[in-house]
Length: 278
Length: 271
Image (cartoon, rainbow over all chains, first blue to last red; front, side, top):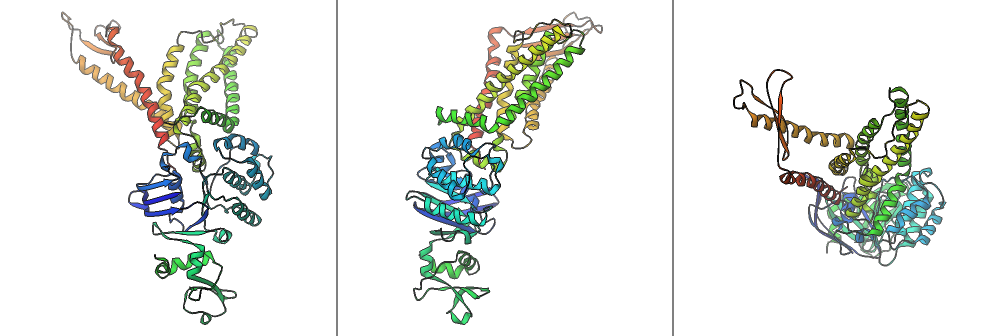
């Protein structure tokens, strides 16, 4: 579905943002794109959807070259930006104006998503708060039935119940032929959704691994003292003792803590990456 | 080049829907300003709001306001928040360009002309019945509309290009972009003309000399003989009409080049 090969990108030639990025994304999966501030997550997403053009390397999305931004490509790719501005019109008019550009747009799905978010269908967009506008935009993005959906910090600005509603909407809305990439720092909001983790660091993807693959190699535990666990790879003090990431030698089942995992990768990069080298 | 008439219509409809408030308020503001100016002129000028003044005002204001409107046609590309959404909309660059072209070249001039004539008609009635100046009403029945259209044809492509090129201070930069070539052209035209005349003098001049008067490339060259002040004789040399077409063709092609550049710039828009 998405294939990036030896992608180089820079706003300024002297300071590359992405270097030799190789990535392959498959349909039917939700990818979590993680990285520090300024790592190039948004730039990578913009390269995938054709908002930025690579300096070299190739990007192929659904058989299209994104930089050409052909309508047939844009009908199948939808981006939910972190910052946005809604036009001064009612929700119904917004639908009337924008939905016809997407041939697979489902009005029924849009109404369902809006219901899940508890949003009224007949209201002026300008009268809504930023969070509410975001819910409209999320509903619209999912209702386009685009094959590739890119979301940049989708839970920023959403209140606590809305984050749960967001997870419900995404989990229920994904189809077999669709792929969703979520770039976020709010990993705790989304870690139950994500199928595969992408970590962007040092201008390249340093790790692409499924959640099941990660929990197969690593175990995530809560212990009272560090002696209770055999050679933790990474640990963090917590109120209940220690949160620990350890090598999963006994094939234990544990629930992945994405924030812990990301911190572990950042601090013990070589140790952890060596576990996933194929 | 991808073009779908259906998407073009959708985009045009969206252009009106998104900018509806601005267009309506703008039209009301223009009509208000025109009426205030026209009625003031009708009430205070000796001969009221005359036909020639109506015509002259129309031409100047049409050119100026078309420039202002044109610089705002790609405002959705100005701020990053709007830009992302505009660029991700499934339309081709050609469809975007066609909508911008239609709005700037046809819709705005036609709408403005309608507003102007309406205001003129109201003023004309007031002028005749209240202020006692029975002036003829201007309804595009002057002599120089064709010249105005030619000027619009020359400047609007530049306006379209700079509207997509410059994200900030578009109007100011467009005015500079329009004025700079005119200044450079005037300077070199005059300098070249003076160089050609140099210190030439007519045969049996009796001390008189030629001085450069004015020139238009591929059209005419005028020199004057110096004599007593106020007694200069001006000689105009015209290129035969059959050969002037080179310049006409050249001048007509320049706007097309700018239009093509605007299309290319639109196509290569990045975040």
